[in-house]
Amino acid sequence: MLTHKQKLDFYENGYIVIPGVVPRLMVDAARKAINHSIGSVGMHEGDLEKFRAQSYCNEIRNAPELVNLFSKTPVQQIAESLMGEGNVQVPGSAQVALRFPGPLRTDPNEPRGHLDGLGSGTNGMEKGVYRRGFTALAVVYLADVPEPYSGNFTVWPKSHSFFADYFKKEGHEILANGMPRPELPEGPQQIVGKAGDVVLTHHQIVHSAAPNAASDIRYAAIFRLRHVDCEENGYDAYTDIWKEWPGIQEAVTATAS
Image 1 (cartoon, rainbow, N blue to C red):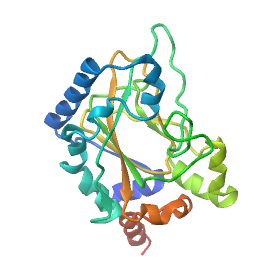
Image 2 (image 1 turned 180 degrees about the vertical axis):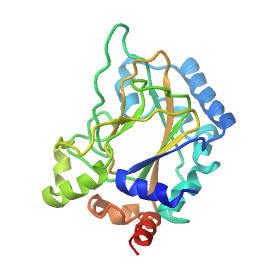
Image 3 (image 1 turned 135 degrees about the vertical axis):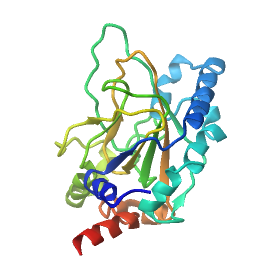
């Protein structure tokens, strides 16, 4: 379970990193399934942009080796400690999130962040369409990511609360125009870690994958976690950002009293 301090860190920054959550055997089984898919099913060059935006290895997204990374490990209990026991819908599939090394003799660009749920035309949603389809992201590293510019999952701390204020002023309808680009309170944080580490983020954290200038593939499985009332709450959670987080509400109240 998470400590009181970890919950307050999540409240302030919009994300936390929890080391060593997923056992090595499960990590290796998931990575083996992914590598088998790459070697046997392969990838068509014309599909690569779609794979990056949605998921690689589509045929194994709901395989036990992937979905058990959430439902058969402490990841589910950690999520429930924040969103409330029994409030987290168990995801039926994972996003297989791979970041391959960039071109040789090319310096990596800086990460460029986004919010999920904004239609781009390549992510399964048309441009101009937006929706808040989940409450939290759970990112499971399936291989070590020891240094920056290795395809790291990257977050912009405090952007969740920044955008809550932004949407109160501008209206969430501005998302129909694409990703807003105001100056954020903090720059990108490229998350280093080991296989089995988990990053848990608020749905409104700006995030991305850093460019990969390393020699190895960045392997991760990403789960989009939905509170049972996610659909009912809908767009309200763009501004009422803790509506689906009773564990966070309790931690903040306990600190204030």
